[in-house]
Every structure is written in C-alpha cells, then in structure tokens.
Amino acid sequence: MATIEDLRQVVSETQTEPAVVMTRELLAAGVDPMEILEQGVMFGLNDVGNRFAAKKAIVLDLVRAGVTAKACIPIIEEALPKGESPRNNKKIVLGTLLSQHNIGKNLVGTLLSIGGFEVVDMGEKNTPWDFYETAEQSGADMIAVSVVFAPALEKFAELLDLLKEMKVRDKFPVIVGGGVTTQKWADEEGADGWGAQAKDGVDLARRILQVA
Image (cartoon, rainbow, N blue to C red; front, side, top):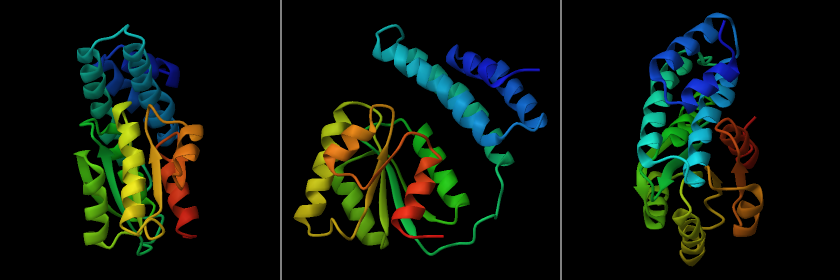
C-alpha cells in the first residue's frame, strides 16, 4: 500500500493520477485525512515551491503541482468530519495578498468552516485596502491573510499600518500564514498570530476570538 511519503513524492513530481489513487488508498486504509493533507499533499507542494525558490524548477512545475494538489484535496475534504462544531457566530475575512495562488488559502477556509466559523472568502490578488474594506463591510471579527510570494511581505506591513491609520487595528485581529512567512517575521510585523499549516488557522481563531 502507498505511504504518506509516497504521496508526497508523486505530488512533488506532479503526477496527478498516481496522487489521486494514493490519496484514495490512504483514506480507505483509515489514515487521518489531515495527515494525508498536510504531510502528503501540502509537503509535496512545498517541495516544488522550494525547488522553484532554488531555481531548480520553473513556473510550469508550480502550475502542474497545483493541478495535482487540487485533484487530491476534494477527495480529502469529503473525508473530513462534518458538523462536529456548532456555528459560533464569528466571522473571518480570508484572502490571498497580491498573489493568485489559493491552495493553502482554500484549505484554511474549509477547515475554518468545519470549525464553526463563517468565512468571507475574498479570493486572490487582494490589496491591503481590499482586506480593510471587506472586513468593515462584512462586520468581520478577524482577518486571515495568505502570503505566498515575497513581494506580499511588504504589503502585509502596509495592511497593518492601514488598520492603525483607520483606527480599527484593535477591532480586527490579523492572522497570517503562507510559504514565505515565518513565526519570527510575523512577530516582528505585529501579526496577532501565525500558522505553519492550514489547521493552525482554526486553533489561532479559536484562541484569539475566545471560542471554545
């Protein structure tokens, strides 16, 4: 039978059909869906991203890896437990800053919804003003930002400055995650929370918004 490491490898090699087959095999064998997602699919996706950063992969490799991941994720989502958490009346604005990449952001949104939060998904290619405006208009309790590429790091600082300028920084806690981010960077920027994995977003939201 396939292993989590096997799945990571085929995702890293952008082999879509084998990745789908392995995902189904692992689920059928009773492997935890979150383990399959994080350690198999997402780690494989990160492998491609790391090769790209090291100039050992091209944009087409990133695109193919995204296609492979997106083929596996709906299968995993179907296996995630539904209805375990009651709705908690907390609303979270979620979006990707600048970039059009959305795989990680979509996973966070799915897990937040399963966790009982109302998610306002802004999609991709958002500016700091987009986050502020959407949070105000929707009556959000929190802003969650996906930062995928280095140019968005500076824009994240602009978002926090904008919230301060508009005198709503305390009103909207801001959590962040993404391939180019780190705990140290998030702390230095003044984010209210940072997540290394998609599932961390739920834990952060529950803790910051004081949801049981």
